[in-house]
Length: 256
Image 1: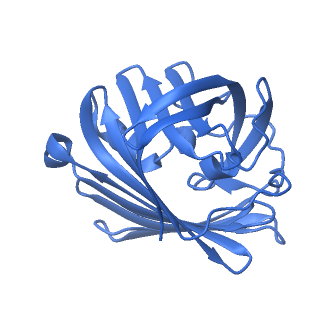
Image 2: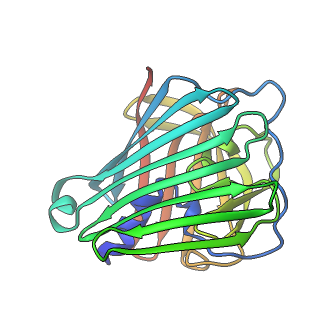
């Protein structure tokens, strides 16, 4: 197994970000009526590769005026941590009424590689602006690119999906942007399933993201299990790739 590949999956926290650009990009639909993004909430996930503990991921939600601030971290543990250390931090700022992302920050440490970046989306100007610095090499990059309209980002996308009606058989588009590469992901609501996690047993709705292009195409499959209630809390996420299966399981749900 390639350690850099494993690090990329852990880093994504949800593998939606691992697709490349493909297809015509629709604008993001607003959250369903009555939906509210969480406030003062922290979710914790264990991350396993096959049967081996690989890392932990935490996600925190905080309201900031009309925006939702979502912060997340991913850390390797155990033998993986000794072989290839990963310590990554993310922050997303999202409009609470529309779901549109306005800024996405990343500070990533993967072995000897350290990169910090900020991606800003200016919908009035119809462009995204990326500022990136490779801390080890001292290299910087500034890139501006046009965007088609309201977009999610790789962190907020999984939770934006929870704001949509998850009726069996329904599909809906999830346009995501990361580092100047808009990604058109199709979310398909496949079925209901009972899922057991360290936090308990949940009745869930299973959703499968798919895309027409990118590194995941023809190499595996991804599923997300949301609670079958108004919260649509993601309690499990799984990426089944050619080198093995990565699973995220909810281990903590705190209001703080």
